[in-house]
Amino acid sequence: METRVAEIADGIYRLSTFVPDLTPAGMTFNSFLVRGEEPLLFHTGLRNMFPLNRDAVASLIPPETLRWITFGHYEADECGAMNEWLAVAPGAQVAHGQTGVSVSLNDMASRPPRVLDDGERIDLGGGKVVRYIDTPHTPHGWDAGVLFEESTGTLMCGDLFTQLGNEPALVHGDVVGPAIAAEDVFHYSSLNPGMGMTIRGLATLAPKTLALMHGPSFAGDGAAAINALADDYDRRIGDRLAEFGFARAA
Image 1 (cartoon, rainbow, N blue to C red):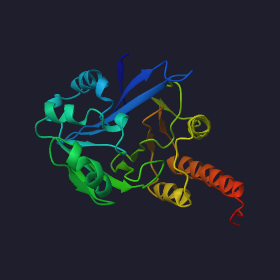
Image 2 (cartoon, rainbow, N blue to C red):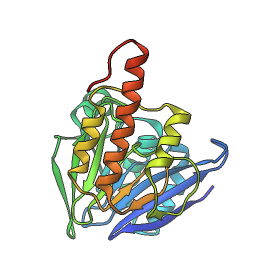
Image 3 (cartoon, rainbow, N blue to C red):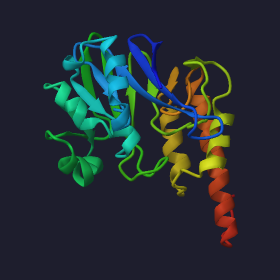
């Protein structure tokens, strides 16, 4: 395996490792480095991928200068190498929402994490500012959240828009259809009545770039893509409710 580096927006880099035998089409595992005076890594990658990701980061910044570590939710591919990064970067701190910190990170992180309130910003310096947004149970995990870099309009989506295969680092075409297909394969989302509303709330950010953890990054009308994804989840939730004899909402 190798980890490939690509700049998907100004000062934001995708670190992508393709695992070919995970599915018939394979799957990418992506982390994102935001360069600034206080560099931030979104997703640590799996623990056994740490050497690959460390070397990828080292091609951009000295790894020991990393300041912030955050991720979509507490799960191995999001934060499996968390403590390895904390060991390499002595000034780094994990930052996540209240639920993730209280339930998992206070115990599992080797240094005390920082709690981020919903909507809280971190100024990384160099013109980069990230905003944390709670998305509980969306697409899964009650501690789920996303990160929005304001200067570039880049939404780091976590597992939203997950898709299979090994596409180019940045695409401009359909990002919703492949995500629907992946949901049909994995059924990885925690379907809940508030899901569509939560996802549509992200559309108000009008992101220019969607940074996917599994799949290519997307440049284009992020709001339209987000709303289309929400429509599909509304359909799925309606179908499931109908299976149990509940009428669809008008």
